[in-house]
Image: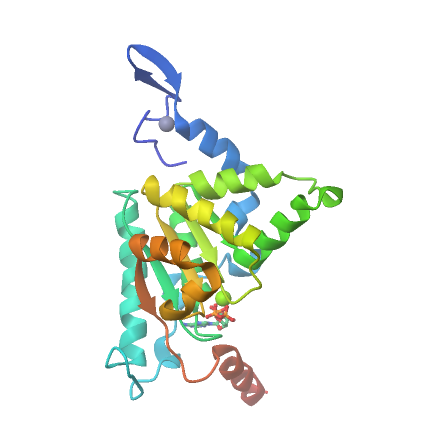
Length: 246
Ligand SMILES: Nc1ncnc2c1ncn2[C@@H]1O[C@H](COP(=O)(O)OP(=O)(O)OP(=O)(O)O)[C@@H](O)[C@H]1O
Ligand SMILES: [Mg+2]
Ligand SMILES: [Zn+2]
């Protein structure tokens, strides 16, 4: 694990001449409950060097930003790499909000970041939002208590972990209750200056409609918006490539 800046891994800090347990003990204990930081197996071998730029058009121009899809992807990729580099020195930097259509490489890029940081033994949690919502609902429903951890553990970890990934914060059916859960996570993180990396296929303008203005406003405060635009879902393109290869 990365050396804790507060206690240098001694596990205690001195406050008013008294040794008290450092917050990192609790964070480590919480995160250790989530296998492989929550990163699903299929995403564990994604690395920056495998990110292919051929899927991003060099002629198509994003009408809003007036740059090509390729240029947009290049900037987003750079922002992801810079984040990884900078987070190692300062854990209180701005996160990223990666937007783009279905199959544009958002999850791929987030997984590249998570893998690079796990390599550097950073404490992080990779949360797939629809799964989170399902788990929260199932622990809410008393009869289906999850065997591994309680809703409270999951919520605490998502709030307190030094770095949180929220993958696919998409157009799901948010209830008032799930919206409040997300608000509570993001509000805590904004107040403690803990970054979050978000992927979504909802545009920044429409986010408020799904998550509410208070949550969206906090996301804007804590994340740099970046885009990954594609003409065609990369999943389709790769399927065609496979067919051609025979
Ligand atoms: N830049 C890239 N280079 C190589 N493969 C890529 C790239 N981007 C995406 N892929 C592959 O394309 C597929 C779709 O990518 P990904 O899951 O990241 O899309 P997404 O933007 O998260 O889509 P969704 O909005 O549906 O969640 C995956 O199989 C991924 O491995
Ligand atoms: Mg995705
Ligand atoms: Zn510590």
